[in-house]
Length: 475
Ligand code: C5P
Image 1 (spheres, rainbow, N blue to C red):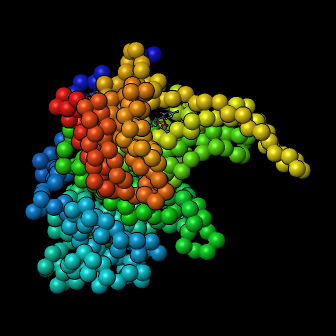
Image 2 (cartoon, rainbow, N blue to C red):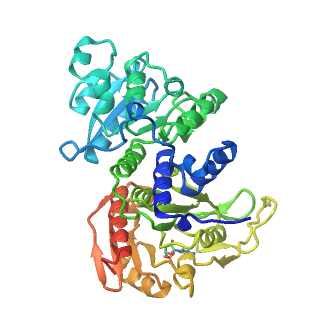
């Protein structure tokens, strides 16, 4: 059977494919699989037509999903659904504003049982809209203008009912009418009871929405607001939703400095088994590595993220390969090559247990099992020192609690990589698991220290540097 990689496709097809994959929040490879599946079913239709559907007649042509800059600020329309997670949407307004967006709010009738239009409007700095049949709002702004005068629509929380209405194309209240009338990208952050989430009806609606080009962030697993309920259904955290929103806005704005580049990123900890139930691990959350993957995808790169076990959601538009141990991580990275750049942000366990047991080790009275450890492969050094097929830019991280920069400089030489991103992980800094980071970029030319900033901002700045380096503007 013939094989084909995305890199072999011609630029126009690649561009169309990238846009379509980003719209669906899928990797380019997954998008190709879906296109080929559809093409196989569509008798008499050429595969290319599936990638690039014929333009509708002029009078049916939808407005292009582009961004009109409004005072240079991105505009977000936040639709708040009726669920207990609605209170987090108030925080989301702030998180979006922190990232330079202006926010308008629409509250469903059910949402107003949880948060008031006054609170949402006060935070957003303008009226919160609630009623499709309110003559004052309709003459003033109107649901069509709400739907169009924005760059992105976010639905958070997206309840089972709101998702069903979206999937069915209903328009019997302001929120659903706006969602039907918009020509802008839509991001949903589902939140509901785990039973409702896993119900076939909800999953059927979700599949329809994804097929319609809606992008999803979350839901996360964990405790529900209802006592004793746990599972998948918690709304993604406001910072996660805001990061996904920025990714979509960047994609829609067409700012793609990493277009045509393939980047492999490792993230999270590794788990090294002791027996089938116990393992050795570390405190890495995966937040920084995942943020870099999201930022690289937003910048147009084709991203493969090899992730250890983490509790953060998969970034939008990234192909994620989930692994447990260091040896699995190395194998996945090697399979993901070739790449233009590799970023090793994972906190790989240095050692594994020499003879992990197949059966659970039994507790014996007065005795403790002796664990003998062996060294894990160094993934960064293995890839950086490859004789052939080495990515042009290999970036490692150095998490240190003392002598940060000298240790990072030493690591740069020892591992043979091009840059080391050094960060202080002493407990008082709160970097491990936290949302901010202070990094130093260590290269053979010197050290650049960046001010403390959010992990998302570190990721965006780093991606900018990677783009400049791959374009030959930086060493
Ligand atoms: O040696 P140290 O663990 O401090 O090096 C940190 C850097 O090396 C990080 O980029 C990390 O992802 C990478 N690393 C690796 N494989 C290992 C150990 C570390 O890729 N086994």
